[in-house]
Length: 271
Image 1 (spheres, rainbow, N blue to C red):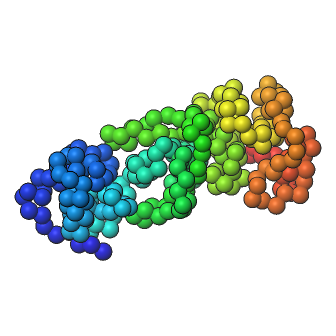
Image 2: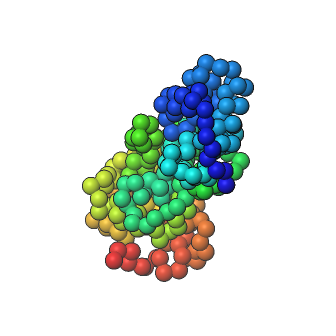
């Protein structure tokens, strides 16, 4: 635990200028530009201010300010979305984190899902006490996103239809099959429901298994949506997929070329 200690007048003035001139976090390069000093000098200043408890180091070369009322620099991230955007851009907030934002779930997930075009070695980093789950995506699949303001910074989050597409593509990003289905149920009941857009997004993503999962669930959740169900059937690829790749699935629903867990073939999925 790093206790906060005093800063001289000059340091306070410089630190204030840096905080005003940055959004959410400060890098060595930004500090060097704002203070008009070499990068090495800026790095030393940031490290010294962190040692005194006025900044908290997020990772090498990136810091966040410590609230004035804090007595220690060991602080939780004030807004993890801002840090995700700084560390993993180009990226967007997705999965269950986006589902929470769009009110598709009442569950509270403490880990932040980040879909990034980067290929980080650590896919489950913990930064200042906040856990992240990272998934690598291709640049061409960075579509269906909405910019949202987080303070003075715009951060991308998957829109409701893209959120559903992502969790159908990988149910793990929805917290598993049951909660992914709950997201879908809530989406279908919401004002954001747009099955034509969902089909279009799935076409652009290009994963045939998504149409099998989507069609299977639509047929059970909203059987009256025959147009969307037929669109899924028309786009089915050869071979069999699993409703949830991580679950044991011993029942093959031949209509959808889909292996499902026991009980899901006939289960009424709507309460």
